Image 1 (cartoon, rainbow, N blue to C red):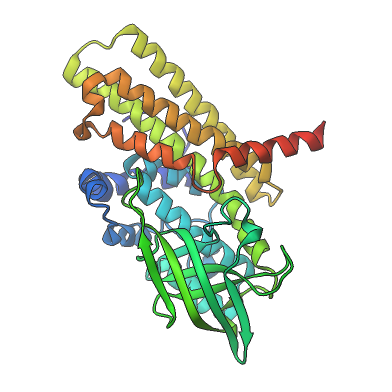
Image 2: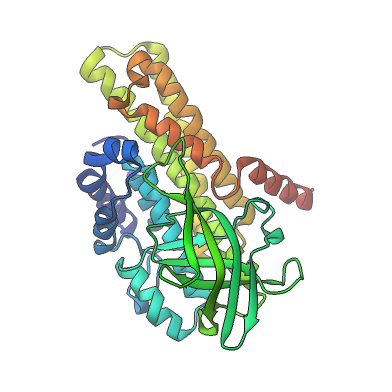
Length: 378
């Protein structure tokens, strides 16, 4: 049965968690080591995830989604992360694009793009960062110059997840000099002339999820590809980033739980009796996982209630990713030499956990967000 969240009644949340476990067992675990070693994104697995409607849980039913709660969504990604942190991140990224289209898209954009994202025909990518504007997103330089019928985009974006595999890129570019109100967002198809994928990064972890630069060379984008009003791009981006941070927290819990369970089974099946110090340390790690799960649960309820989640999202991301890093590191020590070998996969969980501390805003940035919230309260 494995380590599970608090026993759940027969609800949508339990149904989705169970479906995510089955999906991971059938389509992700058998290839996890191979895909990590080869930095291979398994599109057919993503297509199966979409076929089971696990990639569109919160999208309204009118657009083909399941119209479920964020409790279901974050629970799903936690279970998927146990089998593949890379696939959890991929699903989370395409959900950022779905969320932005749901909130800001025109009827035509929803019909043309959102429905294809929901079915898995399209895979989405989200591009905000640049080499000199990672944490300070408002300082981005990629320019979108107005021309008859649309915009000409020139510049380079960095660290775009799913780049090279995605079919639709949500791009933030500068349309005016104003620091925050001079940014607009655009929907870029992968075959748009003047747009190409640059350097593919070689990474420590999450290897089966690509990361690359995007290069725009006088790339013409029709006006109907702008998402939201001109100057609304930063608002479009920020509307999704808080939810994305909760996603990373949930993935972190998944990695931590997976590491604890693998250590437990290793001692049961290979080494025999587990040393008392390891049992106690694993018990404490499991208790921490339950605590962070409850934090994520509160964040999900707040998001479903459409209240501000900036501070609690930062807390969820910080606590979930730090937990994953701490527990996976300890798990290697608990298993000794075996934990260091690829066949037991603990070292992959450890490498993936490190990535979670960096993506969606580094944990140093999350601490800054939290301290600002504390200053407002005190």
